[in-house]
Length: 347
Ligand code: SF4
Image (cartoon, rainbow, N blue to C red; front, top):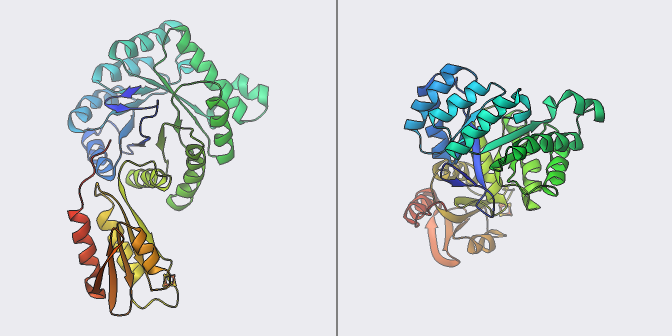
């Protein structure tokens, strides 16, 4: 499957998504946000299309961004058709919520004509009443039953360009639901913990939910949802992929937690290095270690490594010692080395 020019599923690299937080009608503000997300490594972006003016704004947004745009639609099929004509690359809509069969058909035909995939987005907080009644409360099986129902509606119309998400704010529930569905269908899966919460809690909750599934080989694209800046969602998503060796680029920083042996400002240096390097499209490991106890071993194992002492640091490049440099020049030296490291083009 392709969303715009981004392949999803069948072994393609896992992509990172986010959602705009501006009113979609304010296309300029939406574009500004998306350009920032792009800088942070976002590969697909979604905007709510909840009014005709929002659907209209899609035309301007599409003209000014460089990544595929997904329209988030709840049930109004007119808005889905308008968004398709405006050039969206994917639609998130649950066919069972559209209503009459001719309306569902119109949306499906529109997606077929434009070769646009549909994401079925099941959310444990908004399951169908009859399914809830059957299971008594939201649970993974209820979510899977809801997904299968929406899938059948599309398959009955000969539509298979489908991706599915099964989101819950309950990490266990979403893990179980995705596991269950992955054993039943071959469609690509969009992973996420919904309403994950504020940045610190939400990042950890999302990392556990999304990370557990990715580690089991389940999932094709991810979105971290945070009550915070969209850029933080993108950074968290990229970091989850990087932790599992699934990101196509990025600088992995290995640094010690520091202890009483430390003689220089390692925490400050690492913070500065992280913010300086987080947007660079390089593919390397950087180790910044606080002393000679574990320092040389980790530093030697990285592409670029330093082991700090009181006044001097030992610098390593690809495992080879480059001798001592003054501690005061460590930051500038590392930045210089990283900037001259070959760029990694995203696969
Ligand atoms: Fe402490 Fe040195 Fe280990 Fe850092 S590398 S935590 S300073 S012993």
